[in-house]
Amino acid sequence: MKKGLILTLSIGGAIATILVSVLIGVLIGNADLEENYTEDLKKIKTEITSAEEEAKEEGEKLLSIQEEISTVQEQLETEAQKLKDAEAKAEEVKKLIDKKDSISADIDKLKKERESTTKEMSKLEDDVKAKKDEVSKLDDTIKAKKKEIDQLEDTIVKKKEEPIKLTAGQYIVGNDIPEGRYQVTNIGEGTNFFVYNSSGLPTVNTILGDSIVGTGDFVFFTSDGDMIETLGPVKLIPVE
Image 1 (tube, one colour):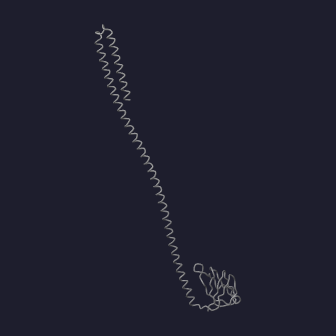
Image 2 (image 1 turned 135 degrees about the vertical axis):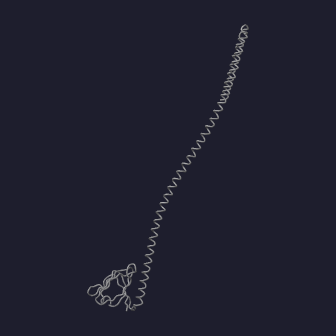
Image 3 (image 1 turned 120 degrees about the horizontal axis):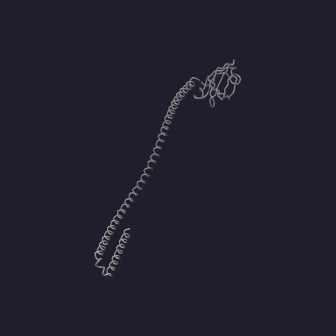
């Protein structure tokens, strides 16, 4: 831009010089008119000089304006880059905010899950405590039953006869089984055990088995004509 402006000014100066030469040639060629036009020539030269100076000043002004334009363009480019950087940072901030919101949502979800787990753990602890209490009570019951069995074993003197094993069914005392005193115990799982007298009335009605299923072993008297009924395999141990 600067070179173009200087070239324009140079061409203008050359044209002005040519015009001056033409005018001088005309004046010289016409010697009679030279004296009359001397003042006009001086005036024209002065105007041309003044025009050249004005053109020079305008050229300098144009150069100054061009420099100002260049400076402003550089400033605009700088501001545009700053704006671009600011937009990039704003995008990064937006991503960070979105990430923060996502993390906050995850934290809220984990808090709810922890609260739910805490409630479940509390319930399980209560259940465990209840089960422990139940086991403790069962232990006490088992100890009491074992003590009763020990007492029975101390007080009952078992005969030397072989135990009588019965499968599930009905048996007549005096026919299938000798009359006497017996300790009945279950074989395997607990079972219902009955003894009916000759009139058909029940004299024994119990459940054999451990402390959870039944009442344990049972000692009873039986006479000829009684009927024994068991719903599962048992063993009759003769006792004195």
